[in-house]
Figure 1 (cartoon, one colour):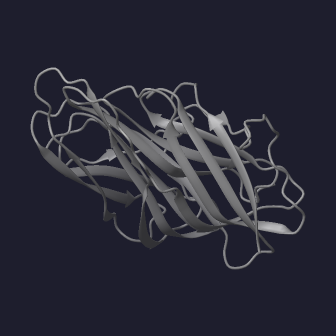
Figure 2: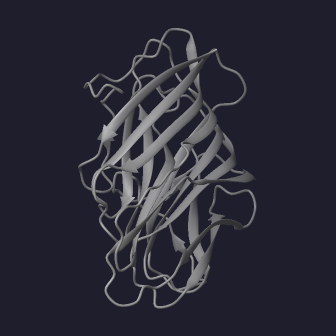
Figure 3: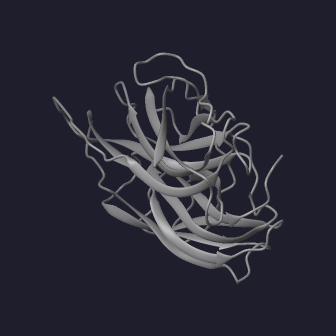
Length: 293
C-alpha cells in the first residue's frame, strides 16, 4: 500500500530560485517530512500548479520540483511538474475560469526510511504574480526494479525557427549542461514543456518543438524527438483581456543508451512561425546510478 506526504508553497520570490514547500493543507507551517521506516521508494508524484492573484500578462512559467535531503539515495532530483502562460487576447472580459487536472507521474525514486525528505519548488520564466504549488508524494514499502533519477535544464527561447538552442540553465539559476551520473545506463523518458513569454507575434501561427539529445554520454549519434506544440494569434489594437493556460508537461519515450560519468546536451528548436519569446525546459529520466553518501 502507498503512504502519502503532501506539502504546499506560496511563491513570492524571484524566478530560478527554490522555495521550500513548508505549508500543510490547513496552511500551517510544518517541517519537512520524515519518511516512515520501511518505505523505500517514491512510486507516485502528484502535483498542482496555479496562480493565486491577478496574472501578469504576456508571461510564462515552468515549475520544477526538487527532492533533496538525507532520505534521497541518489542525491537531489529535479522534475518539471507544470506550467502556466498568460496572453492578452481581447478588449474586455468580466470573468475567466480555468481548470487543469493534476500532473500524475509514476516513478521509482529510492529513499531511506527514517530520514528527512525536503521538497522545494522553483520556476523558469517571468514573474507571473503569486504562484501556488501543491505536491503529494506516494511512497511504497521496500524497493524493486531499477532506480530512476531526474535532471532538469531550461532556457529562454528567442532564436529564429529551425535553430537549436541548448538548454543550460538549472532551476536555481546556475548554468551547466546535463551529466549522466556514474552507473546510469539509459535515458528512459523525457518530460518537456514550452510556454509563451511575450505577446510579440505579428501573425497567427503555431510551432512544433523538437528536442535533440547529443554528447559524449549518448551511445548513438544525436537523436531528435518531437515534443510540444504552441499556438498563438496576434491581437489587434489595445487589448486588456487575458487568456490563462495551465499546462502539464509532455512525457516522451526515449529509451536511449547512455554512458555514465559523461556529459550530454539537450537542445530545443521549433518549426513554424517565429513566436517572439518563450521558455522551454526538459527533464531527463535516467535509469540506474550509484548511491550518494
